Image 1 (tube, rainbow, N blue to C red):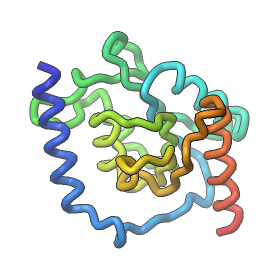
Image 2 (image 1 turned 90 degrees about the vertical axis):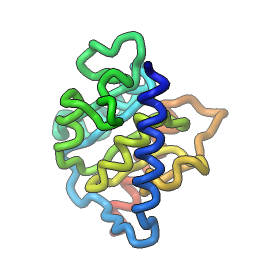
Image 3 (image 1 turned 45 degrees about the vertical axis):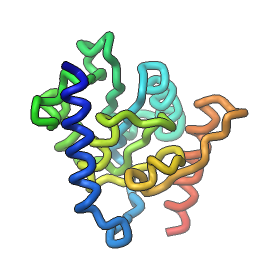
Length: 170
């Protein structure tokens, strides 16, 4: 039954993308960072992003993090297609992420599945940063090319460095 939810979430994404005018979207770089969201494709990428955020900000920031996992969707920070309704909407499990006012969202994946894309597109009030691909253009406010010669930690570190440089310049 996963394929039905995949179809519904993809259909919802297409409908939302028709409504979103990327040129009229107001981009606001966060001035003070207190709450950070993380979306990841797996548990390891989530942990890597948390380590880098803690290294940069310590315990001064609150982190709300989720990773996509078909196998371990019962973990506190995991979600899967099971956490979306039959109409293609996020269920109560993701309400904390959807309702929270985040200063920015760090996405530690270069390739986004429909569920991650849906969460990013519907979370309009947060500054989203991630890795560049032609598919990711509508979802991020700041994108960097993923350097295949570097590891995930190095790529995420560059992404955070560029965000901080932009923040200082504004």
